[in-house]
Length: 362
Image 1 (cartoon, rainbow, N blue to C red):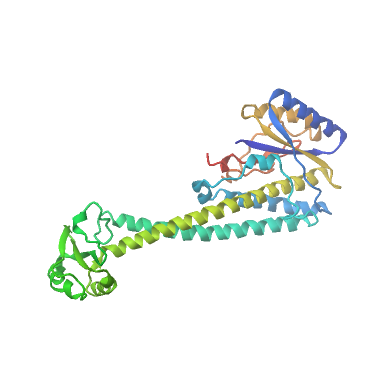
Image 2 (image 1 turned 180 degrees about the vertical axis):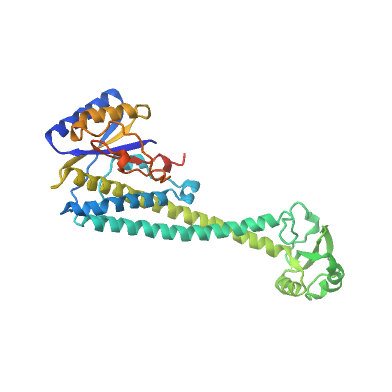
Protein backbone atom coordinates (compact mmCIF):
# COMPACT_ATOMS: atom_id res chain seq x y z
CA UNK A 1 0.00 0.00 0.00
CA UNK A 2 1.01 3.61 -0.42
CA UNK A 3 -0.12 7.08 0.47
CA UNK A 4 -2.77 9.10 -1.31
CA UNK A 5 -2.83 12.84 -1.84
CA UNK A 6 -6.24 14.44 -1.90
CA UNK A 7 -5.84 17.84 -3.56
CA UNK A 8 -8.32 20.67 -3.83
CA UNK A 9 -8.20 23.69 -6.16
CA UNK A 10 -10.72 26.44 -7.01
CA UNK A 11 -13.36 25.71 -9.59
CA UNK A 12 -12.26 28.47 -11.95
CA UNK A 13 -11.24 28.18 -15.60
CA UNK A 14 -7.47 28.37 -15.04
CA UNK A 15 -7.48 25.73 -12.28
CA UNK A 16 -9.79 23.45 -14.24
CA UNK A 17 -7.45 23.55 -17.25
CA UNK A 18 -4.47 22.86 -14.98
CA UNK A 19 -6.29 19.93 -13.38
CA UNK A 20 -6.98 18.36 -16.77
CA UNK A 21 -3.36 18.88 -17.74
CA UNK A 22 -2.30 17.19 -14.48
CA UNK A 23 -4.43 14.14 -15.24
CA UNK A 24 -2.91 13.89 -18.68
CA UNK A 25 0.64 14.34 -17.41
CA UNK A 26 0.50 11.73 -14.64
CA UNK A 27 -1.05 9.17 -16.97
CA UNK A 28 1.76 9.63 -19.51
CA UNK A 29 4.69 9.87 -17.07
CA UNK A 30 3.65 7.40 -14.36
CA UNK A 31 4.21 10.02 -11.70
CA UNK A 32 0.97 8.89 -10.07
CA UNK A 33 -2.40 7.28 -10.55
CA UNK A 34 -5.33 9.67 -10.45
CA UNK A 35 -8.90 9.02 -9.35
CA UNK A 36 -12.07 11.03 -9.43
CA UNK A 37 -13.03 12.07 -5.90
CA UNK A 38 -16.38 13.69 -5.21
CA UNK A 39 -17.13 15.74 -2.11
CA UNK A 40 -20.77 16.77 -1.68
CA UNK A 41 -21.71 20.37 -0.98
CA UNK A 42 -22.05 20.39 2.79
CA UNK A 43 -24.00 22.88 4.84
CA UNK A 44 -22.01 25.98 5.73
CA UNK A 45 -23.21 29.56 6.04
CA UNK A 46 -20.27 31.59 7.34
CA UNK A 47 -16.49 31.12 7.17
CA UNK A 48 -16.06 31.62 10.93
CA UNK A 49 -17.64 28.19 11.48
CA UNK A 50 -14.82 26.65 9.45
CA UNK A 51 -12.18 28.55 11.40
CA UNK A 52 -13.41 27.03 14.67
CA UNK A 53 -13.82 23.58 13.17
CA UNK A 54 -10.44 23.36 11.45
CA UNK A 55 -8.34 22.53 14.54
CA UNK A 56 -11.07 20.32 16.01
CA UNK A 57 -10.99 18.19 12.88
CA UNK A 58 -7.22 17.89 13.12
CA UNK A 59 -7.47 16.33 16.59
CA UNK A 60 -10.45 14.16 15.63
CA UNK A 61 -8.37 12.71 12.77
CA UNK A 62 -5.50 12.12 15.19
CA UNK A 63 -7.76 10.44 17.73
CA UNK A 64 -9.50 8.15 15.22
CA UNK A 65 -6.07 7.17 13.87
CA UNK A 66 -5.05 6.14 17.37
CA UNK A 67 -8.10 3.88 17.57
CA UNK A 68 -7.28 2.36 14.17
CA UNK A 69 -3.68 1.77 15.24
CA UNK A 70 -4.72 0.10 18.49
CA UNK A 71 -2.44 -2.75 19.58
CA UNK A 72 -5.16 -5.41 19.24
CA UNK A 73 -6.06 -4.44 15.69
CA UNK A 74 -2.42 -4.46 14.60
CA UNK A 75 -1.46 -7.68 16.41
CA UNK A 76 -4.53 -9.75 15.60
CA UNK A 77 -4.29 -8.93 11.87
CA UNK A 78 -8.04 -8.59 11.49
CA UNK A 79 -7.95 -6.41 8.38
CA UNK A 80 -10.51 -7.62 5.84
CA UNK A 81 -11.74 -4.43 4.16
CA UNK A 82 -9.91 -3.35 0.99
CA UNK A 83 -8.73 0.08 2.12
CA UNK A 84 -7.33 1.15 -1.25
CA UNK A 85 -10.59 0.34 -3.05
CA UNK A 86 -12.61 2.20 -0.44
CA UNK A 87 -10.48 5.33 -0.83
CA UNK A 88 -10.29 5.27 -4.63
CA UNK A 89 -14.04 4.63 -4.97
CA UNK A 90 -15.09 6.88 -2.12
CA UNK A 91 -18.69 8.04 -1.90
CA UNK A 92 -20.00 10.14 0.94
CA UNK A 93 -22.26 8.01 3.17
CA UNK A 94 -25.39 10.14 3.24
CA UNK A 95 -27.29 7.57 5.32
CA UNK A 96 -24.83 7.93 8.20
CA UNK A 97 -23.75 11.51 7.69
CA UNK A 98 -26.57 13.57 6.25
CA UNK A 99 -25.37 16.46 4.10
CA UNK A 100 -28.31 18.50 5.43
CA UNK A 101 -26.61 18.72 8.84
CA UNK A 102 -24.26 21.58 9.78
CA UNK A 103 -20.55 20.79 9.66
CA UNK A 104 -20.13 20.78 13.45
CA UNK A 105 -23.00 18.32 13.85
CA UNK A 106 -21.36 15.97 11.35
CA UNK A 107 -18.07 16.17 13.25
CA UNK A 108 -19.88 15.49 16.55
CA UNK A 109 -21.68 12.44 15.11
CA UNK A 110 -18.40 10.96 13.88
CA UNK A 111 -16.68 11.70 17.20
CA UNK A 112 -19.46 9.95 19.13
CA UNK A 113 -19.23 6.93 16.85
CA UNK A 114 -15.46 6.62 17.30
CA UNK A 115 -15.80 7.13 21.07
CA UNK A 116 -18.33 4.30 21.37
CA UNK A 117 -16.07 1.92 19.44
CA UNK A 118 -13.03 2.91 21.50
CA UNK A 119 -14.87 2.39 24.82
CA UNK A 120 -16.20 -1.02 23.84
CA UNK A 121 -12.85 -2.05 22.39
CA UNK A 122 -11.10 -1.28 25.68
CA UNK A 123 -13.70 -3.29 27.60
CA UNK A 124 -13.52 -6.30 25.27
CA UNK A 125 -9.74 -6.12 25.15
CA UNK A 126 -9.52 -6.08 28.96
CA UNK A 127 -11.82 -9.12 29.26
CA UNK A 128 -9.87 -11.09 26.68
CA UNK A 129 -6.47 -10.17 28.16
CA UNK A 130 -7.66 -11.13 31.66
CA UNK A 131 -8.49 -14.65 30.50
CA UNK A 132 -5.25 -14.84 28.54
CA UNK A 133 -3.14 -13.80 31.52
CA UNK A 134 -5.01 -16.19 33.84
CA UNK A 135 -4.31 -19.08 31.50
CA UNK A 136 -0.69 -17.99 31.17
CA UNK A 137 -0.42 -18.04 34.95
CA UNK A 138 -1.62 -21.63 35.08
CA UNK A 139 0.76 -22.61 32.30
CA UNK A 140 3.71 -21.11 34.16
CA UNK A 141 2.79 -23.06 37.28
CA UNK A 142 2.75 -26.34 35.37
CA UNK A 143 6.50 -26.08 35.02
CA UNK A 144 7.01 -27.04 38.67
CA UNK A 145 3.91 -27.05 40.81
CA UNK A 146 2.39 -30.49 41.43
CA UNK A 147 -1.12 -29.05 41.77
CA UNK A 148 -1.13 -27.78 38.19
CA UNK A 149 1.46 -29.91 36.47
CA UNK A 150 0.37 -31.74 33.33
CA UNK A 151 1.05 -35.42 34.04
CA UNK A 152 1.09 -37.06 30.63
CA UNK A 153 4.89 -37.39 30.88
CA UNK A 154 4.81 -38.80 34.42
CA UNK A 155 1.80 -41.08 34.90
CA UNK A 156 1.74 -44.35 32.97
CA UNK A 157 -1.35 -45.86 31.47
CA UNK A 158 -1.18 -48.87 33.80
CA UNK A 159 -1.38 -46.51 36.80
CA UNK A 160 -4.94 -45.56 35.86
CA UNK A 161 -8.23 -47.44 35.97
CA UNK A 162 -11.12 -46.30 33.80
CA UNK A 163 -13.92 -48.81 33.54
CA UNK A 164 -17.69 -48.61 33.47
CA UNK A 165 -17.88 -48.18 37.24
CA UNK A 166 -14.36 -47.40 38.48
CA UNK A 167 -11.98 -44.49 37.94
CA UNK A 168 -8.60 -43.35 39.23
CA UNK A 169 -7.97 -39.92 40.67
CA UNK A 170 -4.60 -38.23 41.10
CA UNK A 171 -4.09 -36.46 44.43
CA UNK A 172 -1.27 -34.15 45.50
CA UNK A 173 -0.04 -34.80 49.03
CA UNK A 174 2.61 -32.74 50.82
CA UNK A 175 5.56 -34.62 52.37
CA UNK A 176 4.35 -33.83 55.86
CA UNK A 177 0.98 -35.45 55.10
CA UNK A 178 2.10 -38.80 53.67
CA UNK A 179 1.14 -40.70 56.84
CA UNK A 180 -2.18 -38.86 57.11
CA UNK A 181 -3.00 -39.79 53.52
CA UNK A 182 -2.19 -43.46 54.02
CA UNK A 183 -4.31 -43.57 57.17
CA UNK A 184 -7.34 -41.63 55.89
CA UNK A 185 -7.80 -41.96 52.11
CA UNK A 186 -9.97 -45.09 52.39
CA UNK A 187 -12.30 -43.25 54.74
CA UNK A 188 -12.82 -40.22 52.49
CA UNK A 189 -15.63 -42.14 50.78
CA UNK A 190 -17.26 -45.48 51.43
CA UNK A 191 -16.74 -46.42 47.77
CA UNK A 192 -12.91 -46.20 47.73
CA UNK A 193 -11.20 -49.41 46.67
CA UNK A 194 -9.13 -50.60 49.67
CA UNK A 195 -5.32 -50.46 49.34
CA UNK A 196 -5.65 -48.86 45.87
CA UNK A 197 -3.40 -45.86 46.51
CA UNK A 198 0.09 -45.77 45.03
CA UNK A 199 2.73 -43.05 44.89
CA UNK A 200 3.44 -42.41 41.19
CA UNK A 201 5.61 -39.28 41.30
CA UNK A 202 7.59 -37.45 43.96
CA UNK A 203 9.36 -34.10 44.19
CA UNK A 204 10.90 -32.07 47.00
CA UNK A 205 7.57 -30.50 47.99
CA UNK A 206 5.49 -33.67 47.95
CA UNK A 207 4.11 -36.45 45.79
CA UNK A 208 1.23 -37.50 43.58
CA UNK A 209 -0.77 -40.51 44.74
CA UNK A 210 -3.38 -42.49 42.82
CA UNK A 211 -6.61 -43.66 44.38
CA UNK A 212 -9.26 -45.83 42.73
CA UNK A 213 -12.95 -45.53 43.56
CA UNK A 214 -16.43 -45.86 42.12
CA UNK A 215 -17.28 -43.08 39.67
CA UNK A 216 -20.45 -42.19 41.56
CA UNK A 217 -18.32 -41.29 44.59
CA UNK A 218 -15.95 -38.82 42.87
CA UNK A 219 -17.74 -35.67 44.05
CA UNK A 220 -18.01 -36.90 47.64
CA UNK A 221 -14.36 -37.97 47.71
CA UNK A 222 -13.15 -34.69 46.20
CA UNK A 223 -15.02 -32.62 48.78
CA UNK A 224 -13.65 -34.64 51.69
CA UNK A 225 -10.11 -34.59 50.22
CA UNK A 226 -10.18 -30.80 50.11
CA UNK A 227 -11.27 -30.68 53.77
CA UNK A 228 -8.14 -32.65 54.60
CA UNK A 229 -5.93 -30.36 52.45
CA UNK A 230 -5.37 -32.98 49.77
CA UNK A 231 -5.41 -31.35 46.32
CA UNK A 232 -6.83 -33.20 43.35
CA UNK A 233 -4.67 -32.49 40.30
CA UNK A 234 -7.59 -33.06 37.96
CA UNK A 235 -9.43 -30.04 39.35
CA UNK A 236 -6.59 -27.76 38.33
CA UNK A 237 -6.42 -29.29 34.88
CA UNK A 238 -10.16 -28.81 34.47
CA UNK A 239 -9.71 -25.13 35.33
CA UNK A 240 -7.00 -24.87 32.69
CA UNK A 241 -9.25 -26.53 30.14
CA UNK A 242 -12.08 -24.15 31.06
CA UNK A 243 -9.82 -21.13 30.64
CA UNK A 244 -8.56 -22.48 27.31
CA UNK A 245 -12.12 -22.82 26.04
CA UNK A 246 -13.01 -19.34 27.34
CA UNK A 247 -9.94 -17.87 25.66
CA UNK A 248 -10.81 -19.48 22.33
CA UNK A 249 -14.42 -18.28 22.51
CA UNK A 250 -13.42 -14.76 23.62
CA UNK A 251 -10.80 -14.58 20.87
CA UNK A 252 -13.32 -15.54 18.18
CA UNK A 253 -15.90 -13.07 19.44
CA UNK A 254 -13.33 -10.30 19.84
CA UNK A 255 -11.87 -10.76 16.36
CA UNK A 256 -15.34 -10.78 14.73
CA UNK A 257 -16.18 -7.57 16.58
CA UNK A 258 -12.87 -5.96 15.56
CA UNK A 259 -13.40 -6.84 11.90
CA UNK A 260 -16.75 -5.04 11.86
CA UNK A 261 -15.68 -2.05 13.90
CA UNK A 262 -12.31 -1.51 12.23
CA UNK A 263 -14.21 -0.83 9.03
CA UNK A 264 -16.61 1.49 10.86
CA UNK A 265 -13.79 3.58 12.32
CA UNK A 266 -11.86 3.58 9.04
CA UNK A 267 -14.95 4.89 7.22
CA UNK A 268 -15.37 7.55 9.92
CA UNK A 269 -11.67 8.47 9.59
CA UNK A 270 -11.94 8.97 5.83
CA UNK A 271 -15.05 11.10 6.26
CA UNK A 272 -13.15 13.25 8.76
CA UNK A 273 -10.38 13.70 6.18
CA UNK A 274 -12.96 14.74 3.60
CA UNK A 275 -14.53 17.16 6.08
CA UNK A 276 -11.06 18.62 6.59
CA UNK A 277 -10.60 19.17 2.85
CA UNK A 278 -14.03 20.81 2.62
CA UNK A 279 -13.34 23.12 5.58
CA UNK A 280 -9.88 24.10 4.30
CA UNK A 281 -11.29 24.74 0.82
CA UNK A 282 -13.89 27.11 2.24
CA UNK A 283 -11.23 28.92 4.24
CA UNK A 284 -8.84 29.21 1.27
CA UNK A 285 -11.26 29.75 -1.61
CA UNK A 286 -14.20 31.41 0.18
CA UNK A 287 -17.98 31.24 -0.11
CA UNK A 288 -20.07 30.27 -1.94
CA UNK A 289 -18.49 26.81 -2.01
CA UNK A 290 -16.59 26.40 -5.27
CA UNK A 291 -13.72 23.94 -5.46
CA UNK A 292 -12.79 20.67 -7.20
CA UNK A 293 -10.82 17.69 -5.94
CA UNK A 294 -8.62 14.96 -7.34
CA UNK A 295 -7.15 11.91 -5.61
CA UNK A 296 -3.56 11.04 -6.47
CA UNK A 297 -1.67 7.86 -5.63
CA UNK A 298 1.96 8.93 -6.13
CA UNK A 299 4.60 6.56 -7.41
CA UNK A 300 7.01 5.94 -4.53
CA UNK A 301 10.03 7.05 -6.55
CA UNK A 302 8.51 10.19 -8.05
CA UNK A 303 7.01 12.06 -5.10
CA UNK A 304 9.35 15.05 -5.47
CA UNK A 305 8.74 15.32 -9.22
CA UNK A 306 4.99 15.19 -8.64
CA UNK A 307 5.24 18.03 -6.12
CA UNK A 308 7.16 20.09 -8.64
CA UNK A 309 4.55 19.37 -11.29
CA UNK A 310 1.74 20.42 -8.96
CA UNK A 311 3.58 23.61 -8.09
CA UNK A 312 4.09 24.51 -11.74
CA UNK A 313 0.39 23.95 -12.51
CA UNK A 314 -1.13 25.62 -9.44
CA UNK A 315 1.58 28.02 -8.34
CA UNK A 316 -0.59 30.92 -9.51
CA UNK A 317 -2.94 30.27 -6.57
CA UNK A 318 -0.23 31.49 -4.20
CA UNK A 319 3.11 32.49 -5.78
CA UNK A 320 4.72 32.76 -2.31
CA UNK A 321 4.26 29.08 -1.51
CA UNK A 322 7.36 26.89 -2.15
CA UNK A 323 7.04 23.82 -4.36
CA UNK A 324 8.41 21.52 -1.67
CA UNK A 325 8.16 23.20 1.75
CA UNK A 326 10.98 22.47 4.17
CA UNK A 327 9.83 20.78 7.34
CA UNK A 328 10.00 23.12 10.29
CA UNK A 329 10.32 21.84 13.89
CA UNK A 330 6.91 21.22 15.37
CA UNK A 331 5.17 19.06 17.93
CA UNK A 332 5.96 15.43 17.14
CA UNK A 333 2.62 13.68 16.93
CA UNK A 334 4.29 10.31 16.31
CA UNK A 335 1.10 8.91 14.86
CA UNK A 336 1.17 6.79 11.72
CA UNK A 337 -1.50 7.49 9.20
CA UNK A 338 -2.15 11.02 10.38
CA UNK A 339 -1.60 13.96 8.12
CA UNK A 340 -3.46 17.18 7.74
CA UNK A 341 -2.67 20.66 6.60
CA UNK A 342 -0.33 22.31 9.07
CA UNK A 343 1.81 25.44 8.62
CA UNK A 344 4.88 23.45 7.56
CA UNK A 345 2.81 21.60 4.91
CA UNK A 346 1.46 24.64 3.13
CA UNK A 347 1.26 24.49 -0.68
CA UNK A 348 -0.28 26.81 -3.23
CA UNK A 349 -3.02 24.19 -3.54
CA UNK A 350 -4.72 22.22 -0.74
CA UNK A 351 -3.26 18.78 -0.16
CA UNK A 352 -4.35 16.27 2.47
CA UNK A 353 -2.40 13.04 2.81
CA UNK A 354 -4.31 9.80 3.37
CA UNK A 355 -1.90 7.13 4.55
CA UNK A 356 -3.36 3.63 4.68
CA UNK A 357 -0.16 1.61 4.40
CA UNK A 358 0.33 1.23 8.16
CA UNK A 359 -3.09 -0.38 8.55
CA UNK A 360 -1.93 -3.21 6.31
CA UNK A 361 -1.17 -6.38 8.39
CA UNK A 362 1.46 -7.41 5.85
